[in-house]
Each structure stands twice: as structure tokens, then as C-alpha cells.
Length: 239
Ligand code: UDP
Image: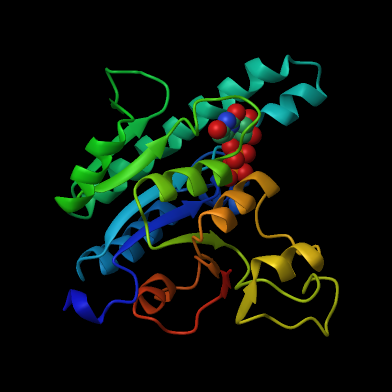
């Protein structure tokens, strides 16, 4: 069955904000449930799944800075927030019958493993869903950059950026009714047209390492499954 798959090893990036659901803050159990079902569907086909989760539903360093907090302190708080989200996802995935590991870029041995690339790859080979917590472990970075970096390290086939919109548009579809979705677009075109996909550090890492990105709507049931089977879902960004 696995040979029909377009992508065998994926890095799924989920924003922290998405976890908050309608409430706008914290962790909505219905979203966790929905995402776990989506991940289960592709795990059952044999896809190796790594996840990077953001922390924006709890804390962002830049927000702290705006209210007078030291930026680095705030960024570490943001990284810790991603570990809380990673643990929540882990718990939900396990309730849905998957084997998982949380690996953190900041050591906290009572709650999860430290990130070690070779061990992460081994977990994936054994069919465990690996959730990377604490971002890159460095302030001034984002979890999008974490997603690009980890995807390159574990040699993922693609970065799947799950969002609330179904791809990259010619303009903001909420403001411009004539905006249309790109099915595929090159990294250079994204730059030149100043389209927003990821922050530039994250984006450039993918481009320089020839790692495709797909931006897609994670909230549409079945999208993740269709995507790994090669259907036209979202926008594919390639070199
Ligand atoms: N963060 C960081 N270094 C990293 C990753 C994240 O300092 O490598 C901090 C940063 O403050 C960021 C916060 O963690 O704002 C949460 O991550 P992000 O904003 O990327 O989450 P998302 O927008 O995806 O919810």
C-alpha cells in the first residue's frame, strides 16, 4: 500500500493558534480530536509523520516584547508553550492508538526526550509519530523555521504547512474577491510577488535545500490523506 503514496515521510507544521479553535486561546479538545483523526488516516497507510507545533495560542516572544518584556525571555516562554502543545497533541494521538514521542530542543527529561536527530529518524522508521517541541531551542526563531530545519534534518519529502486557508492566493482572498489560488508556484515567484507563505528564514531554508512546501487547509477533513496520495490539495511550492 505504501508504494501508492506520493510522500513517504512528512513534516507537518501546525500553528499554535489553530489549536485554540473558536476560543482564540488555549487548547480546544475538538481540534485535537480532529487533527488526530487526520494524522491517523495517513499513519494507517504507512506514512512516517513528524510534527512541529507552534505556541501562538499561549505565548509569543514578540507580544511579550511589545508590553515591555525582554525579548529573549519571551521567546523562551514561547518555546515552552510549544512543549505544552506538543504534549497535548501527543496525548490525543495516543488516545487514537498511535505511538508517539515528543522530542524537545530544550532538555526537560521528566516530560520528554531531548532532540537527537538519529533517534528521531529511528522513531519514524519504527512508525512513531515524532512531535518536535521547544522550536529550534534558540530565541529569535519561529516554529516555521523549526519545521524547515527539522524537515531537512530528518530528510522529509515535504513540509506540509497546515493553515486555515486552502493555499497561496494571488491576493488576500478575504479582502479581494478576484483572488485565485495557485496550484503550484516556484520559490522565486513567491519572493518576487511578495506572497506570504512562511517567514523568510524558514522559506529560504527550504529553497536552499530543495525541500518542497505545501500550504493547505488542515481544517478540511480528509485533506491530509488526499495530499499524501498525490491529489491536488493546497499550493505546492517548489524550486
Ligand atoms: N520561538 C523561539 N524560537 C524558536 C521557535 C519559537 O523563540 O525556534 C518562540 C517565539 O517567541 C515564538 C513562539 O516561540 O513567537 C511561538 O512560536 P510561533 O510564533 O512560531 O508559533 P505559531 O505562530 O506557529 O503558533
